[in-house]
Length: 195
Image (cartoon, rainbow, N blue to C red; front, side):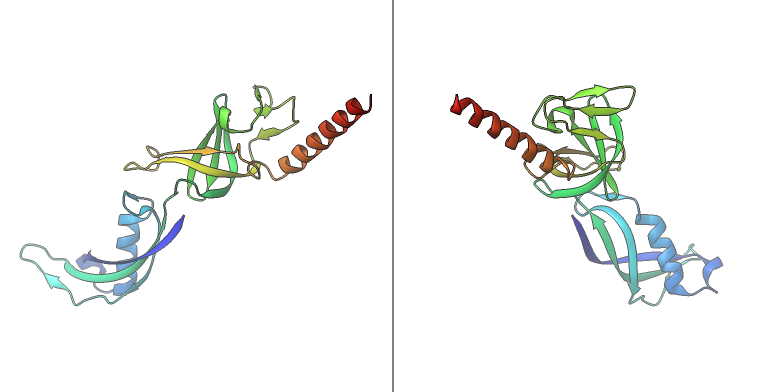
């Protein structure tokens, strides 16, 4: 889930930047400091913007830089358990598929891709269900639900588990495949009842 936080902070303006616009220097310093980093309370900081209310600088003995208070907005991303996300399959591995959901990837374990048995075709890098006809490959757009979230100090170390087993999740065309399967099953039952 994306959120915007209004933050009060400070930044240090080095002497070589004294001739530059202070708001631009603040933006550069704060973006370099925070963008792409994870704060365990608010999530991944995607963007810093809306720099305002920069205070007059304070100089400390032995430090030629000026220190300023500042307010800004931070766009963050923190997946929530139970949230349904849209994304694209970014990588296929034998044990599941990684789904890019905005700025982070989540893993859909093979057991959570669909409600039926899937086999992994190494040659085509595709999961295939012989029973339902469902397939999943790199680049497919999918809907998934967040099962668990473990946010660590970096994006690489954070883990997000996803599931696509519920109705309406997975690839958009899976709903039609399921409807066709159910119609065929119903026709088969009605033929058996007539006998």
